[in-house]
Length: 179
Image (tube, rainbow, N blue to C red):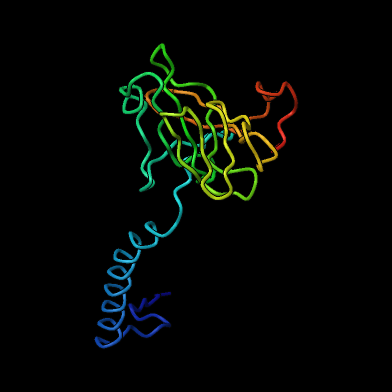
C-alpha cells in the first residue's frame, strides 16, 4: 500500500496583498506603541513608595531630592519639598547637620492655606487670616485651632523618605489629630 502525501494544506495560503497588509499593520502598530509609551509614562504618576508606606521627598518638578542637597544647607535652614501625597512639607536641617525627624506640613489648620517660613521672626505666618505657628508648628496665635500636621523624616542611602506620623505628637503629648 502506498501513501501519497501532498504538500497542500486545508488552509489556503495568504495572497501577496494579505501578507503586505499584515506587514504594514504590524509596522504601524509597533511604531504607534513606541511613540505612545513615553507619553503615557509622562502622564501617569510615578509611585516611589516604599513597602512600609514611605514616599521620597521631591522638588516642585517631581524629581526626588538627594539628601546631600539639603544637608549642605546651613543648620537651621528649612527647605520646602513635595511630601506625602504631594503635600508641601518643610524639612529642617538641625544644628548637628542632619535632618530633623519631624517634617512640618505647610497647610494652615484654619482653612488649609499654604504659607512661608519667616526666618527673621522664626515663625510660620499664614497671610490669609493671621495665624502664627512656632518653629515646631505649634499655634502661637489663631484663628488656627490645631498645630500643623507632622510627617516622619528618614534619610536612607542618600534619599529622603517621608512617612505618616503615627506616634504621639511630641508637641502635645497626645495622639495626632490627623490620624
